[in-house]
Image (cartoon, rainbow, N blue to C red):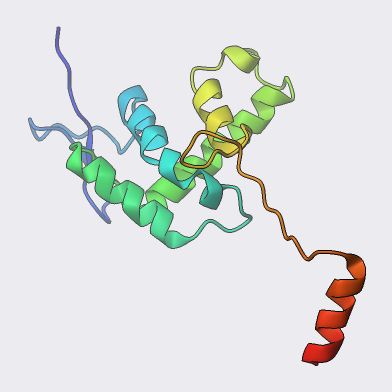
Length: 142
């Protein structure tokens, strides 16, 4: 069984394998799986409108440690494309729909409830007491 890793040279837009064979800078299934796995710790950050750059930088470092070299811009672009494919799969615009190979991983990143470290769903509670005490505390503090 022959396995071949794809290496993307930073800033060049072309990929090379170990045999100096040009591969065109495409993402293969394995590198895409590694990308999605590298983003699991950043599920909360992925759900905001503008994803912080550090998320793409950390993912780039993780992929580089695995032998895949993609810069943060390439990762951001790949995720934009995957997110659009995910939306289309959810809306039934893709033939494979929920059978799309990356559907479950994308669903985990974007749709499943976030969990805290104990495995419980994270909830945000702002306990201000009674409405009267809230008003009084704001009036006296101003």
